[in-house]
Amino acid sequence: MKSGTTALRIEGLAKTYDDGTVGLDALDLEVPAGEFFGLLGPNGAGKTTLINSVCNLIRTTGGRISVFGFEHDSMEARRLVGVAEQDPNLDRFLTVRESLVYHGGYFGMPADAAAARADEMIEVFDLQAKSGTRTSKLSGGMKRRLLLARALLHEPLLVILDEPTAGVDVELRHDLWRYIKRLHQEGTTILLTTHYLEEAESLCEDVALISRGRIVARDTPDGLKARYDATTLEEVYLQTVSTALPIAMAAETGEEVSS
Ligand SMILES: Nc1ncnc2c1ncn2[C@@H]1O[C@H](COP(=O)(O)OP(=O)(O)O)[C@@H](O)[C@H]1O
Ligand SMILES: [Mg+2]
Figure 1 (cartoon, rainbow, N blue to C red):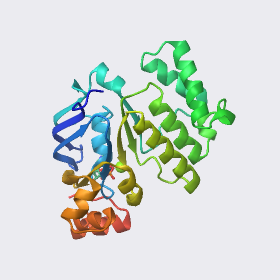
Figure 2: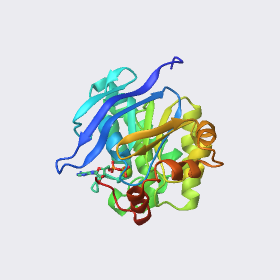
Figure 3: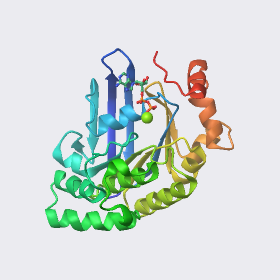
Figure 4: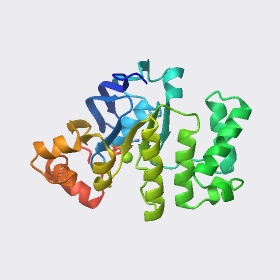
């Protein structure tokens, strides 16, 4: 990728759900190509709504999104993005290997290339023993591995990971971080959401804090710490996205804010 290219450009993105809940409120965001980018914020802030909008999983109510210069709903843009969704959405009747091969087919890969790439991903993510197992029989950790393998199958340039390590054990979490890091070193742009702020601080080159459907701060972890006179990203988080009482309460109770 040429330097200076923008992987993701979001302008005035708005999403109001059918029940009137505002998911995103005129949100602007740019992620340069090749960056390891973290989108951090409490439950209900709008992270998944943003990701689902970029990946055409929901219909937006306003604004524009482009991926490497292509409109987000174009075939070009779809092929450039790989997403591991927050809620594992695996076809329960497919085996691990079939899930991967079919995904390749969906993205226009020739059958033999999709099969070869599926086997490669199975090895990388240590899924060999489960290759012929139906996804409904996988453990939570195995599902996370498969989701990531599937997100990467068609070799996207922008990989979006929505809480990829939520609910996985420490060992797998470390494995996943290591793999994501390598992917980034190979030049892939990463957009990550996570509640592991310490890891976000060490992994992400740039961080945006989101609250109530808006970006409230965006900078390098060091830049944010300097601006908020904080020693950790967690302190910045607590000062920014968690300061308003309803949000702080919602974060504590794990409830979503809908105002
Ligand atoms: N399908 C839906 N219908 C109505 N409201 C929704 C729906 N999905 C999400 N929301 C609301 O949109 C807001 C943002 O949610 P979400 O994007 O899931 O936040 P996050 O991923 O940051 O936790 C929340 O108030 C949430 O309750
Ligand atoms: Mg979410």
